[in-house]
Length: 123
Image (cartoon, rainbow, N blue to C red; front, top):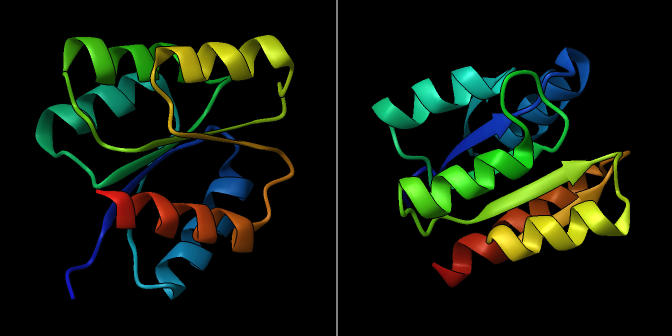
């Protein structure tokens, strides 16, 4: 089985390292970008199988990321948004821009893994 490549865009280092550890234990290859600029640079070099992104990030928000991936890069890859800014407006905007899923923080790693697997099986 191929190893799925995930891009985790999260500026909270502790959360990013915790999620990376759990996702790698599940067999995923995980790259972390801590801000929107790093995300763009990563996407220019490599296209992941799935993107997990926080909404609130320096330089480039998760909503701008969804818009960029869908409308500028025209990638169909699944995008899961995670955010403590789980207000309805952000959730609806994320889906409107083309996000596949949304999880409120605090993120349960087990739930995230289940949702990642669900998205990757659709592709």
